[in-house]
Image 1 (tube, one colour):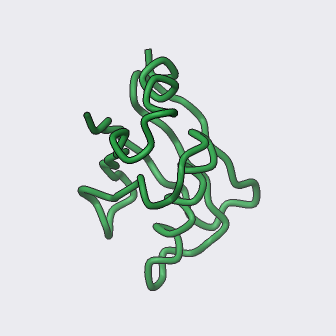
Image 2: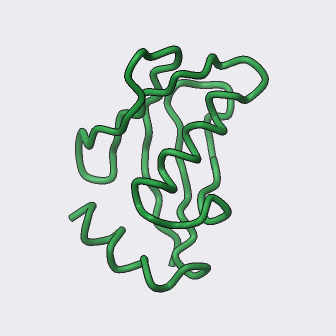
Length: 90
């Protein structure tokens, strides 16, 4: 079952990182600028690292060109981490 999370992106940040702001809501600070999808790629990388899952399990469902994005984390592809993601959001 895929998990949906909402992410608010802060590009060109001096300190990259992830902050949980609510249930299944995160603020992600990235160093990259929003040009040519660089910030999106860094968001996917940081989320994958945060949840200890492969990058291929993280997709941007909505908000490719917006700071507020809806991400889908495919827990079926990596069943070992599925329970961790759901528990982290609880």
